[in-house]
Length: 209
Image (cartoon, rainbow, N blue to C red; front, side, top):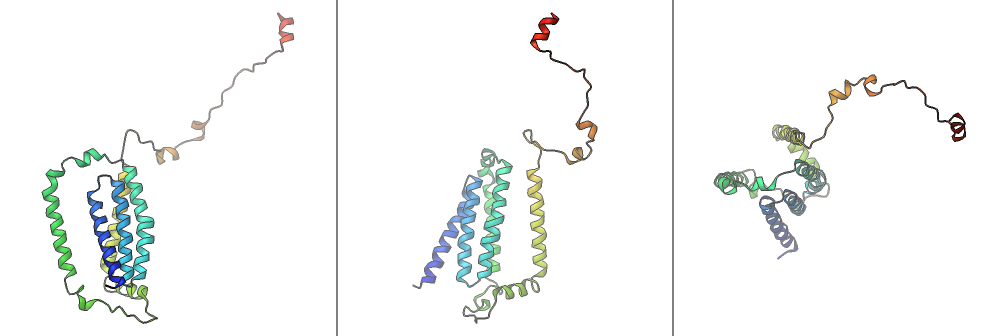
């Protein structure tokens, strides 16, 4: 067995186990960390497929930025774990049905004409071959509309995450921008005239007495 084959099975096994822990971990922070582990192993698989650009982008963008935002959102939402656990067995049949449909759709796509073995690129590339150039050419020509749709979906997800963090809570302390703009100088400071008070020395106070 070749060394690349051993690495492939190693990365694949860890990726599958980490993905299972993402959906089975009770703590959302632990689930996010397992997702980081899955991303690292998928990056290793892409490196074995000579997709260096995608491998490095997955680590720098998703692991370095997106997952950090995921952790911030999870910690700011203050998720009630006990409430999340309620109704698990009640919703299990629907969740299993949706999962089975997703698996069937992924199998249909991956086994189609676009992802068959005959359509895979050759592994022995020339020295001047650029994965980035080929990816950009395909992405902005054949898949331009799906790329734009995915960007809109990501924008909507960002807006939803911001709205979830800005929900009203009793212990939430925030300033209203409209109130800050409407503040006037006279509301901030008030001048009060008072009579002066002079403290006499002890000797003069005795003479005065």
